[in-house]
Each structure stands twice: as C-alpha cells, then as structure tokens.
Amino acid sequence: MTDPTITDADAPRPLRNAREPEGGAGRLLSAVFGDLRAVDGALYAAVAATPTPTLDRTLRHLSHAADHSKISFGIAAVLALSGKRPRRAALAGVGAIAVASASANLLGKRLVRRARPDREAARVTVDRHVKMPTSASFPSGHTASAVAFATAVGVVLPPAAVPLGALASAVGYSRVHTGVHYPGDVAAGAVLGIASAAAALAAAAATPSAKTQALLTAARSWPRISIGGLVRG
Image (tube, rainbow, N blue to C red; front, top):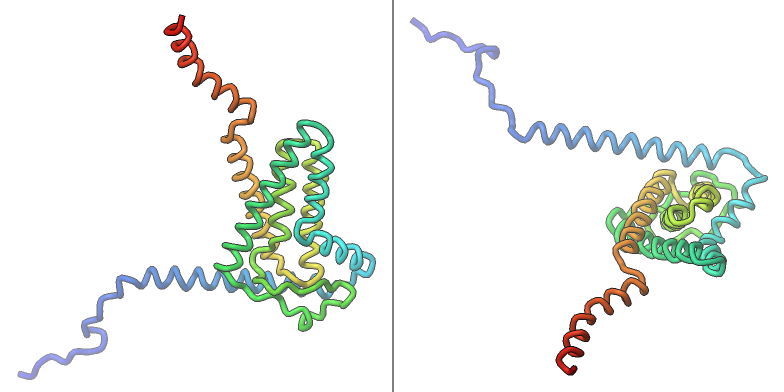
C-alpha cells in the first residue's frame, strides 16, 4: 500500500503572524495620510492656479505684516491703553502668542520637518510672493500666533472675538495664497493656536492677581502680629 498523496489543499498552513493586524493598521494609517497629503497638495495647487489679481497685493501685505506677530502686538498696545478689561485681554493675548510661538517653532517644526511647498512648480504668481521662510512648513507659526491671540483676547473681551477671529483667518489664508504653506499647515496652526490660548488662559486663572497676593500675605502674617502684640502687652 502506498502512502496517501498530500495535496496543496491538505498541506499544513503556517500560522498567521500575530503582528499582522498591527501591520495592517499601519498600512491603513499610512494610506490615509497619503490621501490627506494628496488633498492638501491639490488644494494648494487650486489656490495657486486661481487668478485673483485684486486680492494678491492685499494678502501679500497682510502676510508680511503678520511677521513676528506685528499686527497682534499693535492691537495689544491699543488695548492696553483702553481700560482695565482690555488691558487684561491684551496681556492674555500676548501670553497666548508666547505659548503658540514656542510650541510651533520649538516643537512642531522640529518634530515634523515638513518641506515648504514648491512655489515655482505650482506657478504661484510673482505678485503674491513674500520671502520664503527657511524653517519647516508644519505647522504655520503665523496662523498659530494669530489664532492664539484672537482666541485669548476674545475670551476676556467678547466684543473683539469676531473681528480678531476674521483677521486671524485672513492671516492663515494669506500664508497659502502667497505660496509659503500648505492648507494642512494652516489648519494645524489654528488648532495649535486654540490650544495655546487655552493654556495661557488657564495659567492666568491659576495665578493670583497682585491684589489677591497682597491680601493672602496679610492674612498669613495676621496671627503672628496678633500673638506678638498680645505677648508684648
């Protein structure tokens, strides 16, 4: 009697790799990010290809004016001279800018290191050009600072929320319009700006005011003064 023939169907199959689901999830995540980058690039190209001669110069000037948060600091200076509450709003806004700028430039850009868009390949018209920064593209520091300032000031001074929010949105779009950022960089900068404003406001709320600190100091010293007075009397 001959041994039974083992066919391919009957042959023992190797056990599946236990890490396969993780690899599958990793591939899926990579594919999703690839699709998002494709959409990001397509939006950038669409903005570059849309002729807007009336807006080009205005947005170029706005983008340049937002360098180093000059617009926000100017508004903060005006608010600081306009009363107690606007002055508090200005301080909150400046604090939010500090948090956003540090987070974007010292953390975000160094961790992601995304290259800047190829403005020439996208044929962004020269009328829109501002100086191309040498730092990484992700996230947009201009947007992060502008949104952080608008959010913090808007919380302390609600009437300023809408105009400052509109200004921050315009600053963010101007960075795409001038060709120095992808839309995804601006979206990430906006999220970072909101988070930075929340952190700055929370820190300000946790820090007692000068008046409160003086009262607390007096309250702590009161028992010693009273006891000392009783002993001396």
